[in-house]
Length: 267
Image (tube, rainbow, N blue to C red; front, side, top):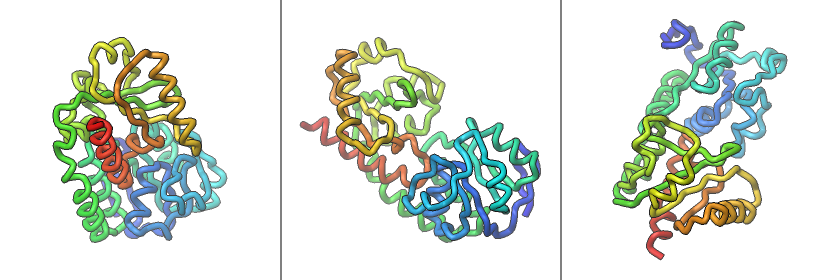
């Protein structure tokens, strides 16, 4: 079938792709959730969820592709994401591969929209409707759970990164009734001004450390960070790559940490 893409123009993709490569974690998560795991023949190094996906051959990082292995696997469709993978997407397209870059969401609704987009391309529309309904049953009751709470969110991406109103997590926090202290900034992701955070005096700090197996090491790292900054803010720390993830698994992670945040503030 032919689909028009705003970046690549008119693309031709198989009516029912049988050999799919996903170079984006959100896409891999979605394909498994839609029941299309048997069609996947390769993934990126960052596609670790669900656990079953780790059995697939690794074809890339976010931006570097193992071209020979990709050729040997003979995919009939490759999924990427936008932003950091824009150049990789162009390279795949120029080499003659059927490729579709899935857009970055600006809210949790964008995650749902991408589920339906992928489902339409791989012919899993009914499965997408069921999945979306299940995810929203988990998300919608969280509305107002952190009403009036000022929140600071920090990802560890080799250095501290926070969010402005352009990030999908900003919209997710608004759903909780919480106020992102950086919501006045139109950017999505940027390095925070640590002194500003202290002056803003948030009610809660949420940290997303690097994903490692040692949970105690994660918590110790965050605890030391707060000591160095001399912050006395209630805080929680995710297990890494959970609130930054924008596939279906996000809703489970978000629900868990929203409830944990409420409990933390009630102590």
